[in-house]
Length: 172
Length: 358
Image (tube, rainbow over all chains, first blue to last red; front, side):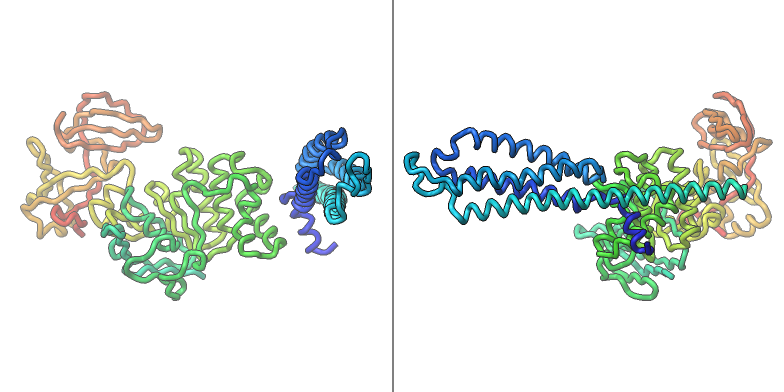
């Protein structure tokens, strides 16, 4: 490892993991855009069922969990990568629940000769969910890599300080 | 290399109040200059003009021979340490120290090296991840100094940096500043109203009063040979005793009550040849007063400081001229005691001009 890389690693001792934290915050923003868009485009009675209730509750849980994880990864807590990955996977799974079903739902008797969600909105929402998932997984992976690098660096510093202490002891 | 030159600097505010009059000073490279004086004497205004935080009304300011009178503060390559630290509360110590370099968009690795080096100098390495509110006043002031050091400026400016600290911490931080100056060998301008700081830190002191420079010199010069009554009374703790006295033959006559005669040395007689029969001001430092046959003093107060005792009294009795003597050792005078004091060394001043008679 050259000096540049060493310094870059050493900087982690004093700088927060802003990249992971900001990616997580971005994922939250994308999720907010997602549910605002869905609730704004309420197409009559289609959304008025238990799915929308679960969606509201889940969005609240998502924002809380993502924010807490953001605080964790900001401080190089390796374990917080796990909830971020789980949240990322759930974001992908969500594509197949609300947007997908609403986009493919046709029921003339219930007053839906056409799907309540058009192609444009469907594409937009899918992009938001995928982007949000990518941000979360990327934040988790970056945090994992950085945490390991920092741990190795701290161990090296400890060894170096122990060695210099032993040397000082010998010379004394 | 940083030589600073202030030439005929005036500061006149918009309301025509003049705060600084014809300030002249040449600061050599690596010199620590202390501007000292009472509140409102123009010392901070002068410093702020040097920093570029105040406009210079008249005169020129040169840094290494280059005229920087009109140069904006950010381009002057000077760093200022304020009394109130001016740290960002939401940033860690590391981020506070790195902030100015980050704004300049310096390489993060270079910033890191500089911050660690400054923290090492100031003993802040273990505090870098803390926030300012987790540090003591002295540590915060060190952070403020560290923020200046990382910039590697040509001139360091200190505006009463120790005023917010308690007495013990002030002494410790003062010694740190002195060590820092010796280590960095940087040109420093330091403003204080505390003469102890001035005497202990300065290579040279600029003593100011009401916007005018009263004397520029080494601490010893200001203490030993004050230019005028103001410098004599401002430098030294407790302040110099000042008496109205008349030159009367071979003596000085302290005109109080029945009058007390203080004999003059041959050199003093020569200096006062032109003042025969006239009134002058006699200055005597408390430490230049000793017990012994001289003039009578009635003790009004006695302060034991351990190694020394400050004896306050009145010449001739209550209502007489006040006098303070700094005597060696633990002396147990009581209120109302009659003692005799002698003067070991005198400072003589012209009564009209208040300038020293030499």
